[in-house]
Amino acid sequence: FRAHAKLQIGGCILLANLSFAPNLRECISDEGGVESLLEAMRHYRADEKIQLACCQGLYNLAMQADGAESMVDSGGILDILLAMRNLPNEQLVHRFCCFTLTELVLCKEHDLKTPMLDEELQTVNTVQATYSRFYDHEDVKQAADSLLTLLGEDMEQTVFTYEEKQRR
Image (tube, rainbow, N blue to C red; front, top):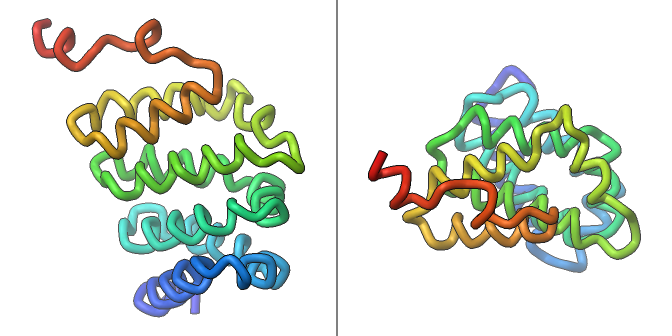
């Protein structure tokens, strides 16, 4: 079904909706749901509907430790960051990406923060760009700011405020 974008969208939306139920998250993770969502993201990098559905599903699955660990082990941090970079104007994609990365950092069973700070991933730079780009969108700005705080970054010290950029 990989070649059929409409089927991919439907499947990703279905997984995202099913993963909303806490009692189904473990089953979805155990049966390869995380990997399926990541594969769809990799195959359709520029499709905002697929990326959004995948990001919503990954966010739900990241709330469960095995799903979070599976996401990191499968290279999902890079896929989430690429969604942010490839779709710079998609507010909901950025919001769910920040939520998902936050869940990974907060995972109590596994240290998932350390792999996120790999310099090659440029996680902090990507999230700072989200913060700056969506400065006027309180929900995205807050999600990015919370994630940066968890990663040990202080937005006041690392980026200019929106008003300062406008004056330049």
